[in-house]
Image (cartoon, rainbow, N blue to C red):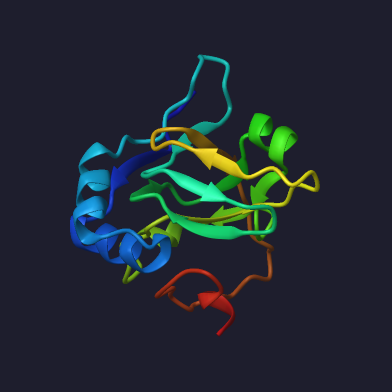
Length: 169
């Protein structure tokens, strides 16, 4: 297999800012989480997905959701995209899933104002009343690299500046 991407941490400043805003943690907790971040990795040689882990503990009641700032960015070669999907075990037991179904990380997201910070909106969508409690370091989502192409008549010249819907503004 040919390497087509490289995972990196976003800057401490970007992570701490988003963690405090989105996850309701203190700057001290966010800084500690940043220092403990691990880059996504595959579990086995045959694994397609790179596991993303939680930077801090979470607790979600049924119907609650949280956008998780992963602290991770990825440089991806042109012609490839990273798809973010839930881990199957948590999905099966809790209906813990992406709130927007599948995350799409385009190759040009790396160069955005937020350093290409991958943030994953997850929801506890179970119907049995189970509260989901997960510890920091738990693998909660996975990223799969897939090739992508463009149409022959494609003439796009626009440049991305952000994420979460920025290309349709």
